Length: 165
Image (cartoon, rainbow, N blue to C red):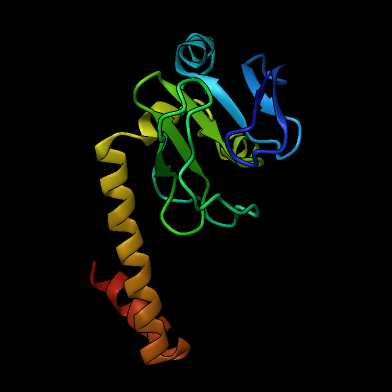
């Protein structure tokens, strides 16, 4: 057993998720570490899902992400943090040295709910992160436009844009 890399209070215990994936789960914060080779073996038996860096309508991530950099539970090096969607969404922490992943408590349930639990390796690609960044800029720009124009004028402008396209 080792101490949790995220909360530093719980222990990482070997656990099998409901869908059969083997992880090391923290008994305090409910986050968990996944070995990438174990994940890839598990994923072979899962149905293919079309993944997108755009957050689905009406689904919200209610948990808080850890803002601080995490150390890999296996090798203790710093992990890279990848945000799943534009806006509020879970992050996946990745160790490039030993191919370990970390998901904060609640992240797996969110990803499973929206069908991205079989796409963890795609989320850390430059193509995914570039598209996510573009979407984030677009969301921010839309929010700024709505604030400047007001709800009614903004909605009318969006309708005109949709009609023109």
